[in-house]
Image 1 (cartoon, one colour):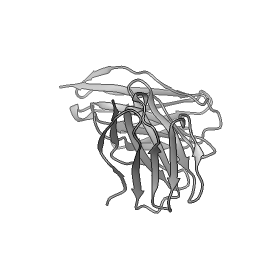
Image 2: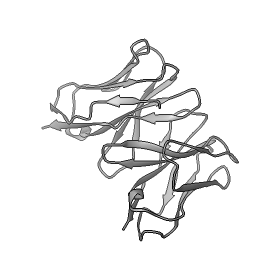
Image 3: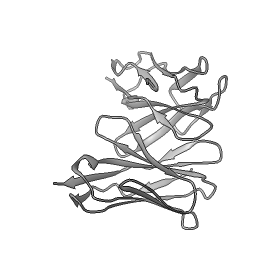
Image 4: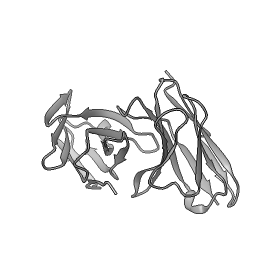
Length: 111
Length: 110
C-alpha cells in the first residue's frame, strides 16, 4: 500500500529559486496537510485542505502556496526559496479528521 | 494559539522498565488525542489514539486521558531498545486540525 507519497525526497535549492513539492494519497482521504519539522520546533502546519477545492492557512504559511489539484493530490510551492525554509516537509492526509497519516518526508536545503 | 506541551527529554530507561511520557494541551475543546513514534530520519507513525477519559491499552502501550486536567500520557511497558525514538503527542480540535508537541526523546538502555 502506497499511502501518502511525496516527491522529491531530497532537494538543494539556491536562494531565490522556486520549486514544488508533490504529494499524493491513495486512501481516498478528504483532508490533506503540509507540515514542516525543525529541530526543537516540532511539526508546524503550513497549509491544509479540508476537502477538494478548499485550502486554508496554517501556523506558518508565509513564503508558501498550495494547490489541491484533485482529491488525491496536494502540492506545496516555494516561489522564492529562503534559507529559513530549510527544513523537513511532511505531507499528510486524514479522513474527516480521524487519524492523520504521513508521507516519508522531503528534506529541503536552501543555500 | 493552541499549545501542546511535552517534556523534550531525553528520557532514558533500562530495558524491561516502564517508560512514561506526558503531554498537556491548552484547548479544552480538543476532541481526539494521538501518540506517534518517530525514528530518526523517518516520518511519524501512529502508535495509538484515545478519545475518552480513562485508559486505553494496546499491547505494551497504554494511553491515559484526563480531559479535566487537559493531560494525556503514554506508558510503555517492558521497554525494548527498539522503542528508542521520539514520541509525539498530537491533539485534534473541533475544526479537524492537528496540533503536535515538540516530542520527547526516549532511549531504552540494553
